[in-house]
Image 1 (cartoon, rainbow, N blue to C red):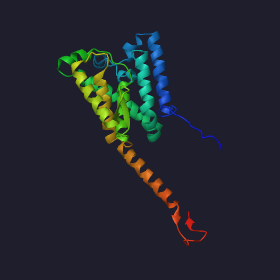
Image 2: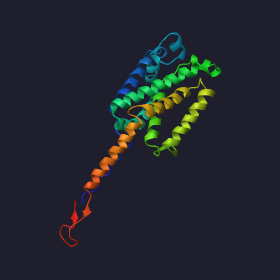
Image 3: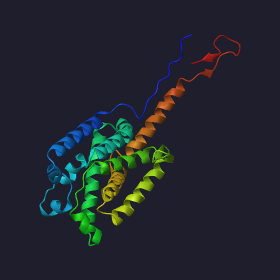
Length: 244
């Protein structure tokens, strides 16, 4: 008897095509900004510069910069954990489009909040925001919509269904964006990523419609399998009692 083979897999599996490109771009941008720190001022998101100086590229470029090594590692880890399965489900083209839309939507939320006539908005207007967190939060929202009951471990200890986890971090981001606009974490951008991801999936051509198509494909595959299931036929005591 051959011994049974046991295999283990940690996480969702190997990096997919779009995620490989995103990780490479983030690592490259991090190294460039580390060598030439002024790059963060030009490519990071500063609402005042976008409005006053028309540095309109910042809502895109900011998501490829990070404030430190652990900031980069955490975002890329989250991108791998939640993004790989979504890219396999959606395809590379739609995944890449969604990632950019969530990131830019997060930046747009920051710009809108920075223009409001409140005290926290003045602080936000001149602050620098960098990181892929807004886009990653959009992916987390999508993951919760597609896999609402998947457990996510809060603080690596408490298993919580994905849909509840997103509600929790959304509430935290909303509260923190008002209370601590200059904090170390761009909470307004996180909240914007959640909102942009939700709106895009609800209205995007490949969003919820894509989910319905996926469920329909699953049903079709199940129907085909049932056609070839083992069914009883022939004489009860005959050699062809079971027909495939």
